[in-house]
Length: 472
Image 1 (cartoon, rainbow, N blue to C red):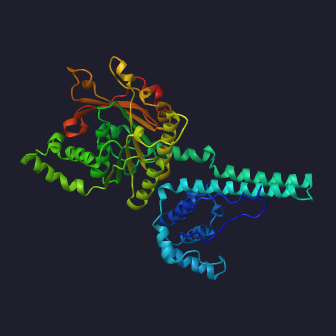
Image 2: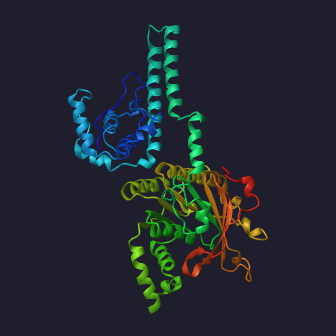
Image 3: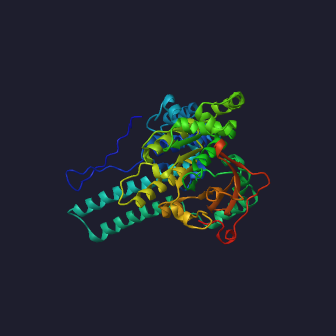
């Protein structure tokens, strides 16, 4: 939409080439205003984070005021036509200079609502507002210094007071709250089980029990494994559990395989038809029946596969943003981190750290689960039992720090021909922010391109769990 309100600043610039403009994030402002229509109670939740005067575009502040009035009489979502009617009333009463949006524009704005991420966008608006005030302050300082009538005592005192006001605004928008305001919520959480509808099921009963129902939105989950262990199978398994069984919109971003190969893995796992039968085109009548039975649930699932090569963080973020708005995206699986297009940086470690941090912020911003598959280095091969650890993550420092959960895959029978644990795989939850670590044993069925629960096997916390529970 064309910006109808320009916001150039007056005042002297440092030189003829510099143009003063206020920092602002119009996309964030639109998202906040749109989200208020869908969930008007967000006004209470955002109180203390943002003030209507923080909007650089006053039209969105006017929408805020209109919704705040309407929610006294309307419960739940406020339709665009109701907002438009209230804006007309406010204009007729002389409280606003004009009607900021027509009905069609409000309907378009409503379609951009992202209430789960409203808090994040409100913080962006508030931060830009503080930055804008700082720009204004800089101009004021320059004007004062160039004023022939400059008074050291009076002008410096006035400037100090103005700067103090900016500091206070910045500290308020930081969202600091006294612990006394938070303790009751903590006690309520202690006796209230998480809503299963807020979690993403994984398809593994013991794992979902460990995580109180599944993966938590807003978090980044790292899955690490050596080549050939099955990180792609595990990733497609998470996608199948979320989209096919759970009906939750999911994106599988493959950077290593084609979309046809990923589809074969999913079809094999859902139909229990051997993957090599699919690849060779030699399915018999029994296989065809299984495939036919599985087709409908796969075809109707909200699961997208994207095999576009050379994916960068900005392009992925734009895709996720669009799918959150249009499809209600709940989870994205990236296969795998080291194959993403890295930003320019002084070293590979710095580049991976930047990508890891960006993926973490993306999960928080959009309120989705971001599963990042990673390749482990060869250090585990030097150990007697070959069991991987957090330190085996390639460029592990930043990845380990950013991850809310790290799952390391281990298959003992890959390293021991006569292993007594043939057909087993360990899901080693080596980091679990806010929860216990554990090792969960599942069955590996690579011929069906999947991992499945093992009947009668429950997760068991390792000896170190007690002292490292809820590791940050």
